[in-house]
Length: 108
Image 1 (cartoon, rainbow, N blue to C red):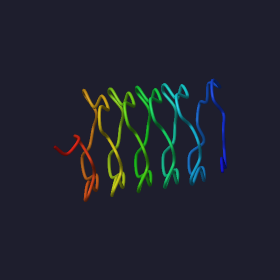
Image 2: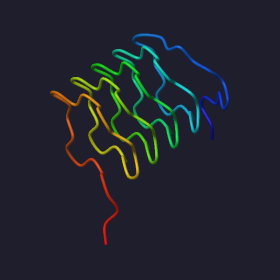
Image 3: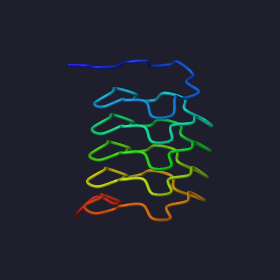
């Protein structure tokens, strides 16, 4: 069941937004302001989050497979149990981010 599907829509973002379990696969969130957003369990596969502000965002259990997080600000973000396999984290700020159980590469 898709809770929220905005495929192909350019979204600037809404600080504090509740996007729990949202289907945002492949969406363009370049430079989006998602400070304090709740993205728990969200599908962000192949999403473009370049330069996004995700400070203090809740990304617990989110699927970020292949997402572009280049130069994104994830300061204090909760990435517990998130899937970051094949994600581009070049230049991303992860200061104070919670990474417990986060998948960064496929298990062999």
